[in-house]
Length: 98
Image (cartoon, one colour):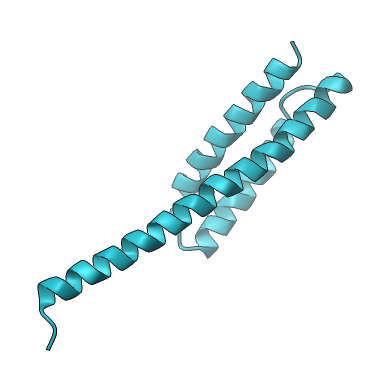
């Protein structure tokens, strides 16, 4: 029989390893996303388009809320997370237009 404390420590380590891998995936995914939003920003700047697209942003938020529900993630958290990302993208786009 395995010592319960040792088994708990092993399970904790396994969960933490998974969290570390998922954190890396999130960072690399965000990096890839921002490469594309930077390209969009350059296109907008080159064609004198506004840095923000409120209609698209609203559609994206609705879509993410739906995805969050499907993933059993708090939709309000997902909305706040996407709003933060969108605000960063807009800030980058505004800088490109100066």
